[in-house]
Amino acid sequence: MSFEIRTRVKELESELIALRRDFHMYPELGMEEHRTAGIVEAYLNDLGLEVSRVCGTGVIGLLRGGQPGKTLMLRADMDALPIEEATGLEFKSKTPGVMHACGHDGHTSMMMIAAKILSEQKEVLKGDIKFVFQPNEENGCALEMVQEGVMQNPTVDAVIGTHLMTGLPIGTISADDGPVMAEANVFRLTLRGLGGHTAVPEDSVDPILTAASVIQQVQAIQTRELSPHKAVAIVFGSIHAGTVANIIPEKVELQGTLRCLFNSRDEPGENVLDRFERIVSHVCAAHRVSYELEWTFHDPAVVNDPMVSAVVRDAAADVIAGTEQKIVPYVTMIGEDFCRFSQEVPGTFYFVGVANKDKKTDFPHHHPSFDIDEDGLAIGVELHVTSALHYLNGQLQNKPS
Image (cartoon, rainbow, N blue to C red):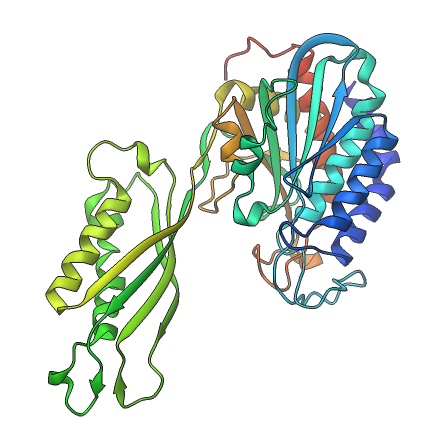
């Protein structure tokens, strides 16, 4: 069966690449994926799937198998980013200031081709497959999709998703157990002091000096308050204060992220977010500065289910058989709202490497020169299809991880 799938993927590879390049040329930001969703919707209708919409630009395609069984959800994201593309590709973005800098164009095209191949296998499927094309992953739309019932009608038993990664070389696949992507918390911190002239700083309360101390002191959380085995990253990405050189400003506004490779809200006692505010409050008190702290975004960690991961790894073993590809461990502090689905049912999020220095596809995600080695697209399709067949047809249902 694996040889037949590989052959079919090869037959459809030109269509796969054409779809990806088309999506790449016409990127759309979150909740604006009207063209993308329309193409996906028409494609799934042509395959004979039961197609519906969710969250406006989200698309669901339900493939009913020829035999009774469980329901597997496969998920791909569709949105692009507000970045001006600098790749120089022939098929570079035609939309100024918007580009696919995270691989979602590849995710969408891979799952469309997987849907085509699996629809050709529907008579042997023991159960159903729900293909979910998600809008606005970059801003966390998965929770809204869950609230709108994406896991129901029929009820989903397990979920599998993937991400093309330039942090992994082409020819590698990863599907580890446990935490594989970080909890992501975004904060906005406002410090308020007393403005004045820089010539007489004693008459002012300087929030810039306070900000410098806050930035340094909160790093002690990961180096002195938690075990080195518990990964935490606190990074300030935006600081705004003042207008000219000789005026101490009234306030400083800071924004950043606090990431954990575990779910901080489940921790007993003082959690990481509480520790962060404790340090902020004491530093501000020492500097006579008031503060306002707002957590503006939160997604839990992506924690892979061992049984579903075992299914994907066994499928991956079939996919790499007879090739030089490898299954490798991989964990990242990037966040992903796939966690909202895998909190509802057992799930696994696996990675496909697409980094190739010779093809200049080793730039990090969200970089203006981000690109993927398109050889990874076929690997992703084959693994989607093989994982679905393994899960639904029961070969690995009782296999330990």
